[in-house]
Image 1 (tube, rainbow over the protein chains, first blue to last red):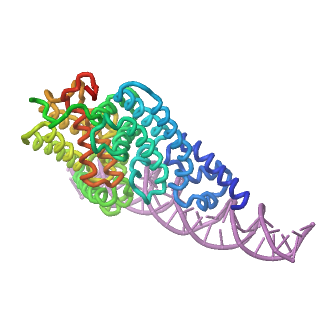
Image 2 (cartoon, rainbow over the protein chains, first blue to last red; image 1 turned 120 degrees about the vertical axis):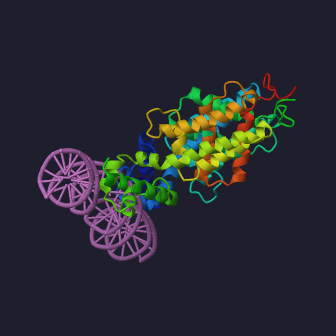
Image 3 (tube, rainbow over the protein chains, first blue to last red; image 1 turned 60 degrees about the horizontal axis):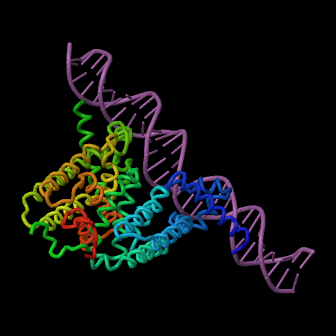
Length: 190
Length: 190
DNA sequence: CCAGCATACGGAGACTGTCTCCGCTTTGGC
DNA sequence: GCCAAAGCGGAGACAGTCTCCGTATGCTGG
């Protein structure tokens, strides 16, 4: 790639990061081009579809989820608390930019999605944390499924503008549903 | 309202129902006006914001959720199965039109939303079913919260194009998280 | 060093969608 | 039938997406 092309590309991503943070992922691409001081043609050559630009921007903070997983692994305490804290971190990060949660969560498991690499980071971060609690979990609890559940909560929180204390009990339900506990036949009244 | 105005209004809603079903809630309003054989001005006078039109269209099938709650109440069997079946019905109905799930779920609890009446129907349907299982539920389980959780699953299912057998286990997790069972200190290993 | 070409730029503009304004038409009470 | 009031509808302003192509620029081999 030519040096000027590389420079333009970098500047576009940089500006897009700001604009997306300000306005969400629906922001006008032409405005991004304007603020990056390139023509729309240049932007669309580098990023033919909106998703490609989102992808580039998203990489950075998907990495933060990965880092949060490491933090989660280093925490001590009972499984319920550890998982709850991790889920809260996950929701917090994934809702950092408006509209990010739906985008990431709905692309989970879609191997043709332009942001599939991001999804893989999320799934594997989730996988690492879940593995560390595996004995306490119900059988058949699967990384993608939990990502979807927690991502669903994140989506609702994001689009509904929910505060952390409204989100926590919902995540509590998910944690309880995921933990094994003694539930032989799931019959509450003996 | 004048008779011709009423006629136009009805035709717009009728056409909108079809178009939304075909193309989701992002469909062009001008096209709806075109197919209803009215001018855009007419459409926008009756429904100043897109939401108002959506609201009118949504009424019909939100009522179906209400009916599904009655069916749920008439079903027999253990709480887990009853709730799971109801949740599945709920998700099925709410995802009937693409994009409907996010819209309804994110408006839950927002008393200024133009579709707040729809949300109330959902919440109260959920409430009726939950009440019928109240003794089996954890304390503090709240109608809106469960609507959000199940709505979150619905949103993910909707936007990710998930099939029923991918959704069921997720709902299973939610049901298990909502049911009381014996979980004194939430300690998995006795 | 510079010629020449592949590469990249950028802006005009086609196209689509949203929404408003206002002159014209229709309705319904008198 | 008359005539306000109510309603209609389309032209068009505005914004966003995306493409095409004439022009400019970085790079490389001589």
